[in-house]
Image 1 (cartoon, each protein chain N blue to C red):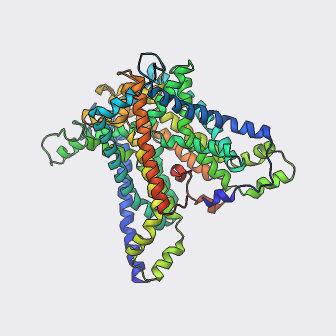
Image 2: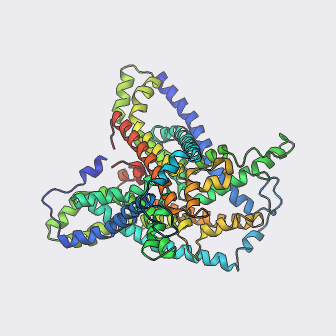
Image 3: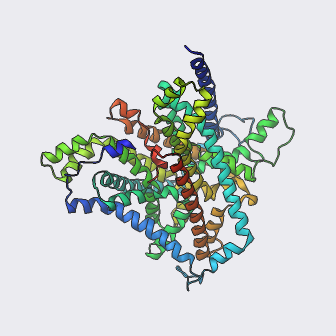
Length: 283
Length: 295
């Protein structure tokens, strides 16, 4: 082994330590929320005052909270369905449609990455007022379709691109119509990615705050409920208990989505660059 | 990416018009109506004057004159740019070694580590910012930990409600954004380039500086862009941990559509933010071209 190679390995070890420290920085602040949600004190401060599940009990029988949760779930499912439908069709036509219009739509669909959330929020606020809808759950759904769209397009696009093009051509050569090829061949082959895109879109909507702030009418979502509670120091432990539940659900769904996204791909494809990589892709 | 180009079908396959229409409809509606038309509305509203009605009245550039002449907006815009710039710098600089490790040293742990660094991205942004509020607060985690360990005798107010708190919180919140683009750029550098550099006698640091770094610049620029855009318009973090000294342009836009209730002026501010972002995008694209984009 050459000296240079040895030096590179030593460098790799130091870098490994750095990555470990980075992960601690990434996770430590988030993990404080579960830690203090079990702490028997209104203050989130050391020393810890003893273990309690009391803050979790305050989550039960709270009509404002369960209303917000129901809203978030409904909005999340509807918005994720819309965003996934758009993600599938936009990326499919971008890859196989061969028209400038399809390419334009695909480029536009990834544009929300380059628009700050506050501007997405106010532009949709103006729009929904103009068409007479006003701030409402439908308005939030529209906003969340937009926010989740880049994710679903990127996930679906990389999945469609990973399917060998000969499969689609074989289906077309054997006389299948475009629609049959799409529905019976391409969609089943990319089903895990469809589920993954749906889940990630759901998470995006479920946790979204910046846009929803402008579009919510009288029915708040869960993040808006949390925001309203942050003003009261006494309700902070309850927020932390609720936050712990939300974080747990988010981690579970994101893990499941990650597993699904790689499912059914060849081993080499599984270590191909992740879909999020194209978050910054320029058109 | 080359894989995508390769997946384009042979030219002899044709697509029926009905199928094409049906497949383009959902995406077309969303992109043209919700993105282009809505942004067009903002642009239109920016040139109206506020008369309390939805779309304002008249046709005027007065909103932009106010933005350009009132020093308050210059201060806040400059502050937003400095904060977003610092956040971008901090995020990209700290993410680069992680991406480098993932691309060249991670081995079998690579997929797990990639997953771990992206996982926080899928958790609530509001909760991540809230976590920093309890860390930095007067009666918070940091103060109490220092007092507990005997380093300080009484809590300090120095953490919360400072622009520094905003920078740290935003850098943490957007950290997952930066790693992936850089990682992909590093991972797609042909290994033969590195071997050639070392065969030609380049020391590890030289080959990093002359081969790896320039080749990863497209990823660095992409990372900088996806961190800069959301942070420059952020209004949640300044409100939670920044205090009045860290008001950002997003805060002003939000208040125009809330308490201040001057929608045309808020729209004008939004147009200015979009123009700033457009400049940054153009600069990034220009730099990208200089480094020879592979994306």
